[in-house]
Image 1 (spheres, rainbow, N blue to C red):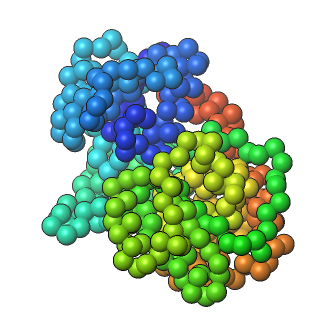
Image 2: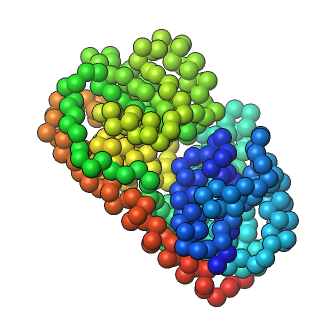
Image 3: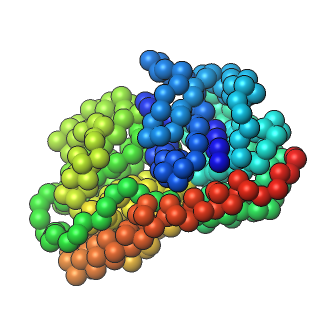
Length: 374
């Protein structure tokens, strides 16, 4: 069978993130099953128009919402027919059900909602105001298209917006859980905190920095390592410099998977302060390395982290609340060991070996259902 994924970025794009990593995982698995798989995405500086990544043919065209859609449509018309087109949404879809003339599903990680205002503020505030309205209209137009997502909160949001058919399949991770859980103690100094993410406004990395600073003010010898790159990097470095926190925070940049795993394994807690997540892949990756997460009570994160079972969830979305949540538990070694073990054990159920067969079976079934016109 022939599959096509439409997604704004691919794995070679400098701004790729968790969405692209899981997309590559699914598509590569389809290739291993003997299918022909394509991925159409935006161009970026230095890219080639077409290349093969792990068996997936990646085609690039356009650099913005309009030009990428025109490029995708033009390229699509030159191709042999596809059995399934997967229209991946990131605030704005590809509207493929109305032009692909074959089976089509929508793949979505999160309904952005308030995140629009996080990205579009200042002189771009009108876009942030219009974005949620556009998104609601888009979901209404797509209400009869089968949706695929991983998060229960996203499923609820889709239903609220009138979507009628939703399939939820959890995300998987490449990270293999440690065979044995090494001993780790909270009494070890310093308290090693880590933040692993694309550095973007919606991740609220500055909240993790503030949380660490509050812990220091409360007498906890805490440090924070920030792994990742992104548009917010220079602003964050400036924030650290202005508040004289250089001894507290270390930016370690982009890490390879082995380097990232080593950092996660060495840390006491992963911090996650995002406005909203489709799930929170790095939480499960940290858990696989025997490190629980301390997160904000936001959609997605409250599913990847089970409160007081596999990690900590603050009462409010504030550095003060997250610091208080950590302070309550820092002397309880028994509790820490219990959530570490539970998080580590749970992470095994999210390995790709458990998830990919389910996802690929479903995608193949979608590629064989009767074609319905929108």
